[in-house]
Image (cartoon, rainbow, N blue to C red; front, top):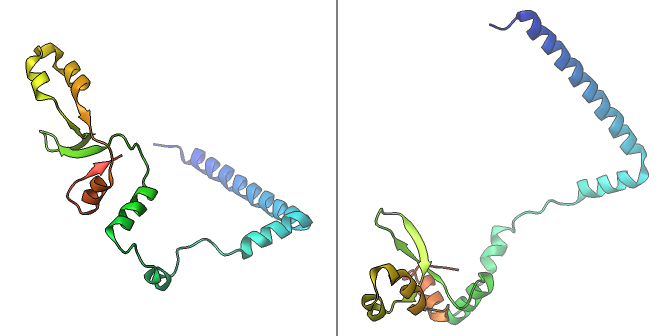
Length: 148
């Protein structure tokens, strides 16, 4: 069990430190107030309105892209990545989700290779699909989940 005298001593020390810091803050605020360049900067900072979200009325007035082509173009301008390959979402055996490159495997080459060489042959012979407007359209429609 802690000693009550040591707890009281720690409390007194903390209260004295608190009082010292409050006095230091008061002195620094007075010094800052007496300096002309800092007061104008502080006043400007305090009078400047804080950044905030637009009003709901202003958001409601904004019209989205009219057709699917414009929506795909907007999406492509907002989300940039590699154009030569993209990833698709798939479910693993344990039920968790993951992403892998979307590709077409050369099954003839895989089945003709030895079991120890199949990974190497797969990497050498697969064809990776590139990111196209059609892939993005399918993603936006919810028919395909892709990542970049």
